[in-house]
Structures are given as structure tokens and as C-alpha cells.
Image (cartoon, rainbow, N blue to C red; front, side, top):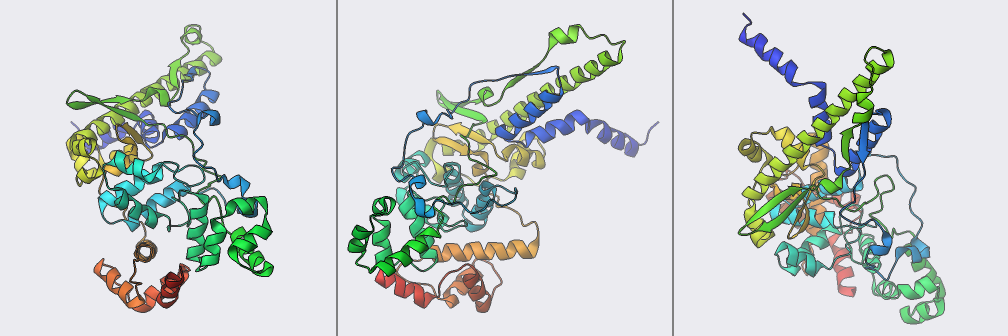
Length: 440
């Protein structure tokens, strides 16, 4: 008779099969990564057949509305993109981390994540803020306050509504948004046409001064949200929520991924007595395992999605102000799904709701956990410091005032460290910011 310990170890080894490992790996992939993975598997497995399906959102540029007249491609002075860095975490992931560190209030964080999901490939927000606020059930002014903080994350200028605003925020960071520069930015059409004479007249500047200002603008990035290694593609929601009488109906979006099946015609003609036939049998077994893994992924996402709707019904009814604090651990308990599995389900998944397409992460109040204490803590302080300065009103915050606010937020920090971080972020002293505000 086996001891309980042996039984437990045997059970654990049986549970963690290659098929289960494959299912877990598929679970944490978004639809685009999963589609690429399936394509690679099908190229190596002649018995796995993919059936392409129509996508929910059109990728045809002709069908996409033209939200901007100030196309950055027309802005020749600043149109050169910086040299692409080596592939790494996407800009979207980096901004998501900054959002979790910058917004301690989970409803504000949820709204910020919603805006992140709404960015185009230049890092702009094509939708009107009032329309987004209406969809989220919140005041436009409150959402604008959140957006103004987001515009000052790294890279500066993401979340802007126009090229003019994008450049203005970058110049503000450099302490160069003076009245003459504002006039120049308000006349980008003249800049695109290279009408230097009229620009000098409007800005009331000498030619050398205008050339200096143009050089400054040339150094800016008109597309700060452009990520060459992780291009923005239309979001394909994994789940679809629609009203159904007094409640809501949840379905899985099968159109987001190709359907798979085993090539039964080829399977019927496999001769298992030959080496080639045995290899084809292996292919057939692996193809069936892929299909089972996809079905397990679908069932798990549906299960988690259904519980999110049950726990956050008030959001679907009343908007973001009705979001309740919800942790992944709490959802793991109610669904009998491991917390790490919940995290994989939430990663990169979206839900199409009556209030728009929202990231599943938006429904959780848990902030990101520090992976390495000192570095992450410094990053958190820097992002919070930037947020406090970005939210300044008429009263400009001194380093002493910033230190007091950071300490109130729970950061063990001294004034000299605040000054060092502020300088490292390229933010001017309070006296300089005060003078700039008076002249603007």
C-alpha cells in the first residue's frame, strides 16, 4: 500500500502532463499571440488544420474613421522616429505598470487602463473624452484629470488628443512651453507648409529665434506611442457581454481565433505499421491535444468572465463609480480556480461590454506587486512624484511640500531624495515652474 505522501507525489506528477502544460501556456496568451502560436504549430503538424475566420474589428484602413486632420506623417520636421530599441516588454505593458504605480485609487486606475486600451498606434486617443466618460458612467472632468496625469507618464505625450497637445506636453516637460511656442504650436499647418514668413509674423520673432524654436520641435517625438516591435492591432475581445432581460449574457468570441480540427481524411489513411505512419499518428495525437487545450482555455476564460460579471454587476449597470474592490485571490476562491490561473486569464484579455471594450484587469483592485524591492520602490516614487506635479493647480508644490505628500502616501523619503528624483525626471524647480505658469 502506498503512503499518502507517495500518492500525493504521484497525483501531482500525473496532473502536470505535457497537455496541461500546453493548456497553461495557451491560457496566458492574448488572441494575437495565440493565433501566431497556432500558425507555427500547424506549419509543423500536417494533421492540424486551421480554419481562418472573420475578425470582429476590421483592419482595413479604408473602413476606419479619420479622427485627425493633423496627421503626424505631414509633420516633416519631427517625423523621424528614434532608432528602434531591441525587442523587450511592450510599451503597452510598460504603461500598464506605470498606471498601477501612479493611481493608488482602483477606480482611477480602472479608468486609466480603459484609456490605455483605447490608444491608437501613435499613442493618441481617437475618441472624444466626453464619449469615453459617458461610456464609463463618470464625469468628463474627472476623466480629463486622469488623462492629464497619463500624458505625463513615460514616454511623455501618450494619451494626447492631437499633435499640438502631444508636442505641448513634451515642451512643458522641458520647461519650454512659453507664449511664443504656444503660438507656433497653434499654427502647425503653417509649419507643415513651411510658411516661415507668416510664422515669424504670428510669433513676432526674428528669423534666428524662429529657427531655434523649430530645432526644438524637431527634437520632439510626434508619435510617442509608436512601438515598432509591438505594433497596435485592433483589439479582439475574448468575451462578449450583452444585456439579456434583467441580466447579462456572456459568450466566448470564437471569431477572434481560427478554428482547428484534425485532418480526418489523412488520419483514416494512416498505416501504423510503417515509420511514416507512426509519425503521422504522433501528429494526430498532438493535434488532438492542441484542440483539447484550446477548449480548456475557452472554458476557463468563460468561467472567470462569468464570475467577474457576477461580482461586478454594478459596473455594467451604473459605470466605473460602481466598481467594487475585487482581488484575484477572492475570485480564485469563488471559482475554485488557482490564483495564478486567474492572473493568466486576465493577462492581455478583453471583454466587449455595453460600455465598450474593457481589459479584464480593469475589474481588479489589486495593484502590481514589487518584483525587486529597491528598484521597484524607486520607480514607484518617481511615478508618484510625476503625478503630483502634473496635478498641480495654481499652488506650485515645493520640494518640501512634495516630500510631505509622498511621506503621507507611505514613502520613506527625504527632501534631498525628492529633489534628486525630480531633477532626474527633467522637472524644473518650483520657482521655475511658478514663473512659467505666470507667463503662460
